[in-house]
Image 1 (cartoon, rainbow, N blue to C red):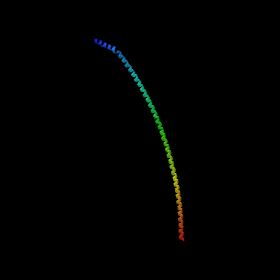
Image 2: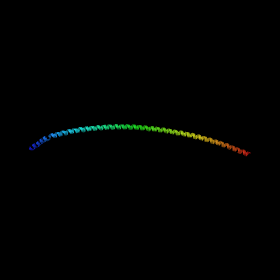
Image 3: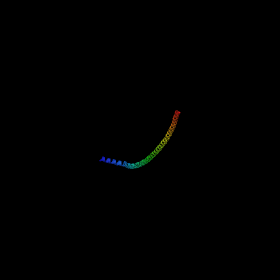
Image 4: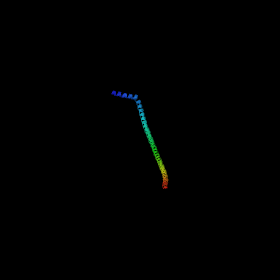
Length: 144
């Protein structure tokens, strides 16, 4: 029992010497632990709020970018359609001009051919007339 009394006395002495300090340290540690827990919870909440905010901003930017891309795509399609219409119009105009030039060339060639045929006919007529005169002279000369 003496040992138990000595051990108990030692505990009482420790309690007297260090008890208040230990309770104070334990209380401070509990306060610090509670403060750290609160700050950790606040930080987690703040981090989640920042994450949600960034996610919302990214979604908004993605939506804006998608809308801009749709607008640009539409404008590009419209521009290409306009270019195709212009190209088709120019091709028709060129085709019409070529057709008109061919028509005029045919008319010119036909006119040249008619003039050449008329000239050939005139030259044949003159040649026939000259040949007839020569034949008449030959006949008249052989009769005389």
